[in-house]
Amino acid sequence: MVSIPEIFRYWLQGGRVDVGFLGAAQVDRFGNINTTVIGGDYAKPKVRLPGAGGAPEIARTRKEVWIIIKQTPRSFVAKLDFMTSVGHLDGGDSRAKSGARGKGPTAVITDMGVLAPDPTTRELTLVALHPGVTVEQAKAATGWDLEGRNASSRSRRRPPMRSFATLRDLHARTAKAHGTVSTEQQQVHNHTEGGTTMKNIIVATVIAVAVGGCMRIAPIVKVEDVQVVAPNSKPTAAQVRQSIIAAGTSLGWKITDAGPGKLEGTLSLRTHTAVVDIPYSATKYSIVYKSSQNLNESAGTIHTNYNGWVENLDRTIRTELSRL
Image (cartoon, rainbow, N blue to C red):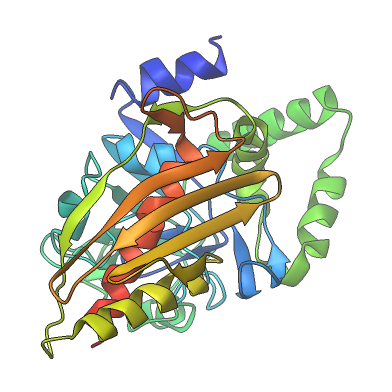
């Protein structure tokens, strides 16, 4: 057993963990996941989930990540309601360009089969089916046009009965140790809002809540002179400004003018507040730390939640600009 600070600072941030396991309420075609909110906006969602916890750290720094999730149209979506943890971002080499380490999600294991990213596009494709499941069923349970890659000829063999017996015994002993029974766990699944979480991610979300409050400190992330990329046009400074405002507003940031060519962004979550300056022009923009409350900023370091918020803002700005 090791302490939570050691897990994050030595094992995770140090790149000493080979495989990370994550659950999710939503996953998109590039393996990005949502464990934060469902429906509406961040401030007033239809369902507020446990949140990020340690998942972004795992997704961004592990050598590879395996995602375990039930495959339904509500969980396999064309567009996330909120991006909590990065997978392959927009596909291709976008993950590597973002600075995230490792291979990202290399397998998504569902109750129907196994998906893996395409070597070039990084879009999740069906590579194997569980016994009794067809390609058509898997496609019907997916919110995008799922590619099969000969999955029908690669059905996975049914595990031997002794494996089921071992798992059921472990499940029973775990339930007994925690003073619960399997029927109670099933009730948790049945009564979860909208069916967006499942038994197979309960452990992951409990861990996420447990580690969410621990102190994680890292150097303040710097987003400097990001080039404006708009494939279909040559945007003006006014269009860049509007894209930044749209991106920030969609994530709960309050964006205001702070002078010619400069915006100020403020994000307040419970007792935590982050304030950034966002200088911009027709060709580039930056996101610069200005001030914060209850994020333990000191000597160029800050709670990693701040870095996650800024990285998410940067990604969303890029997405808005790509639509111009």
